[in-house]
Amino acid sequence: MKKKRLRFFTFILIGFVLFTAFILIILSTSPGEMITKKLVENQLSKIMNNPVIIGCFETNIVSRIQLLDVHILQNEKQFVGLSLARVDYNLFDVLKKKIIIRGIQIDSLRLYILRDSLGTFQIPIASAKQTATMDTGKSSFAIQINELSLHRASLFYIDRFYPMNTSIHNLNIH
Figure 1 (cartoon, one colour):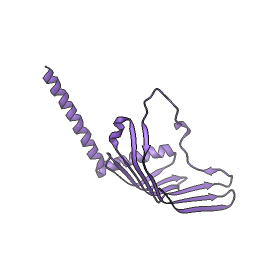
Figure 2 (tube, one colour):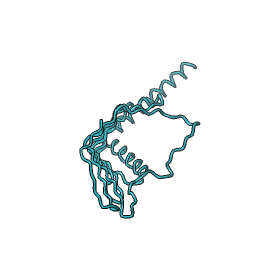
Figure 3 (cartoon, helix red, strand yellow):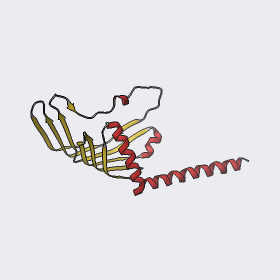
Figure 4 (cartoon, one colour):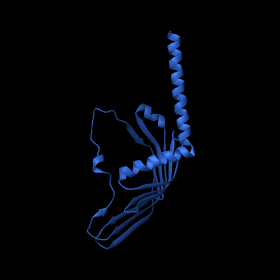
């Protein structure tokens, strides 16, 4: 009887591992990346309260996500754009309640800050409904970012309250 139970649980475990591997393989293919891309666009759009468009999404799920040609829109105009965002991580660190990001690389970031003629800054922010509250009863994850690299960033400040346009180009932070 014990051998039958052990054999049953072994088959269940093997089935679960195979199913998980199959899902990871499917999500790493082009159709899987399209599904994941839509999910990421929808979640980022909800967080930013503005449309987020990702031109190209590439991942192997386990250790890398790469976004190409990303645009965050406000009033149908680009507020933030970037040519490349790449995040390198180890998915299995989540099992240890850690999120360790080995590196974040951002290339050709374009950030537009607009102040209208009434003196109001037009900056999209996350919804007030999504503000975090401290709940010590829930388990938490430790988040660690080992490297952040920003290349060829451009910042544009357009002030219509005090007529002024300012920009910074080729900003690099390592």
